[in-house]
Length: 146
Image 1 (cartoon, rainbow, N blue to C red):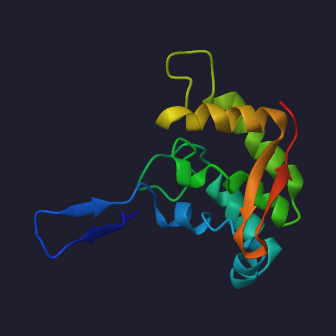
Image 2: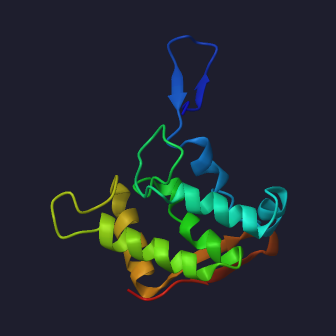
């Protein structure tokens, strides 16, 4: 999978994004309904998410989830908005149990001032905040408490 790179007019400067195209496709929290309609509806979105979550922490340059990187942290809850909340519950539980363990390597990804542990705390409570800018509101997407 090709990484997205922007190069300035100065040859010595290059910026590499921390996500692949599949990671960024799910980074559209403000109007999921329109995104899902553009992608062909809930059934196609769920199939695409199922494929995306076959690997939970694939790291860069892979067309799968990279839960150790902030752009993808809300993507498991996209299932809620595609009328498949049981899939949110499954993915969130797998992330909680497979990627967060009481071992030195038991924190997925870059800690970034508490982002990963905050994700875990909200996930363990069975919720995540969804900021809906088009409606100028905040909603809570649900999973199962851990």
